[in-house]
Structure formats: structure tokens, C-alpha cells
Image (cartoon, rainbow, N blue to C red; front, side, top):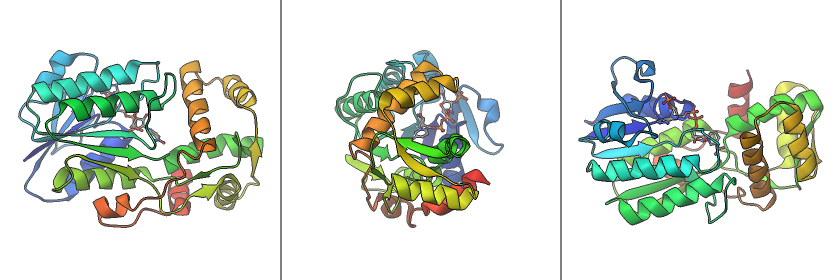
Length: 282
Ligand SMILES: NC(=O)c1ccc[n+]([C@@H]2O[C@H](COP(=O)([O-])OP(=O)(O)OC[C@H]3O[C@@H](n4cnc5c(N)ncnc54)[C@H](OP(=O)(O)O)[C@@H]3O)[C@@H](O)[C@H]2O)c1
């Protein structure tokens, strides 16, 4: 069986390729990226660009199963366009089973909400792929670790209201994805990869303080103040808008979801948030 990983050179892609190569299930892993020279030795690499469908026809040829990792291009509408192009190319190339990575609680929202591309991609793959599986990702523990660095400098971890989030480690998403790609019985299923516990704002601020040894509290701020802070820090507008939409999801409880899907798919429990923060912040 030939298994493709599209977006293989990125953080998540490398972790998925690592999971697939570590398991001997009689499969061949094909790593697809615009920078195939970044693919580790011993793994078949192919060139594929979501913005150039002609390259994807060759990249996806002969694959039995394929996972599509969205790019990190936050220009409004761009990821919807790229994901749909990639699904279309996979179906045209005859890929038998397409796995897409989506976002927790994906629903019909307008750009620039981060969920808009996820929803469009889910709808498209369901309608067009012969066999499909959706893995919705909760918020990454590693992204919280990135926020922690700025938050500890300012002494506060901001949010729009107190809320709970079951952060998930990137490696757990990778292991769950490999479980789908190598397993059977996942066609037509939608899973949500989450950690095993949802943390309140105060709880996660306290955990970051404990791990970093710096004092930190959770602070409720307005969306306008949150946005202004990010803009002052020089973060590009498209990315700021995405971060604002994520905080709205947090405040609405959209990531207050604990499933058993990581354990079900990966065969082991999800990493504790504390361990993921220690690994990311060391
Ligand atoms: N839910 C969350 O909390 C959360 C947190 C972090 C990330 N994410 C999302 O998860 C996904 C993976 O994250 P990541 O950290 O692995 O991102 P990443 O390191 O930026 O990797 C993105 C991958 O997409 C590829 N790519 C970019 N533009 C492409 C194009 N035009 N055509 C084909 N491939 C392209 C990149 O490879 P080349 O440049 O080599 O082509 C790279 O392999 C992203 O969609 C990201 O937004 C979600």
C-alpha cells in the first residue's frame, strides 16, 4: 500500500512521516512538499504545490491513501482554495482514501475565521472523495507554549472570557493520523483529536507559571485590546485575525471537548499538557 503525506516538510508532516516510517505495516510512505529536499533520507519524496494542480496530479499518482495537511497560509480564502484543489487532484489521480486535517468544532463561518477553510474542505471531501476520513484538531499544546513566551513577558495570559480548552500535543495528532492511515474501518468517520483534560484559563496560566518559573495569571481582555496588543508586537494582520477568531472559539466553548479519539486511533493516551509544555518550552 502506498501512503502519501502532503505537507510533509512541516512540523506536523514530519511527525506523521516519522510515525509512518516507525511502523512496519508493509506500506510505502510518499512524502510530498514544495521542498522535497527537506524530506529525510530513506523516504520517497515527491514535489507537489497546492497552488499548482498540475504538480499534484503527478505527486498523488498511484497512492492508495493520502493525508492532506493544510498550509499555514492565512490569507483569507487561500486555504479553502488550496485544500479544495488538493482534494480535487487526489480524486482525479484515483487516490482511494483521502484523509483531511480539520479544526475542532468546524462549522459554517465566514473568512477570516480559521474555521472557514476547515468547513469548506470537510464539505468538499465528503461530497467528492470515494472514501474519506476527517481528523479535527483541537488547539495545539505547542501553540499555547508559543503564546506562553509572550504572555510571561507581559505577566498575563489573555482571553475574552474564562473558558476551557483540551489542548492536544502535535505528536498525538501525528500518531492518530498514522492510526487512520494504517488502520481499517475509518472511512466516513469524523474524529476530534483532543487532550484528556480541558483546562480553564486560570489553570493553564498556573501550569505555564509552574513550568517556566515565572509568575502568570489569566486576564480577561476585550477583542479590541487583544488585537491591538498583537498588532503592536508586529504580528501580520491576517494572522492577528486568525488568532482573534481562535479566542472567540475558546470563549464560546468550541474547544472545550474531550474525546477518546487520540487513544482510539494512536493506541496510547494523549500526552499530558504539562509534559507537552515542558517539551516545547525547554
Ligand atoms: N489547531 C491548532 O492549534 C494548530 C496549531 C498549529 C498549526 N495548525 C495548523 O496545522 C497545519 C500544520 O501545521 P504545521 O505546524 O505542520 O505547519 P507548517 O510547519 O507551516 O507546515 C505546513 C506544510 O504545508 C506545506 N505547504 C505550504 N504551502 C504549500 C503549498 N502551496 N503547496 C504545498 N504544500 C505547502 C509546507 O511545505 P513546503 O513549504 O515545503 O511546501 C509544510 O510542509 C497548518 O494548517 C496549521 O495552520 C493548527
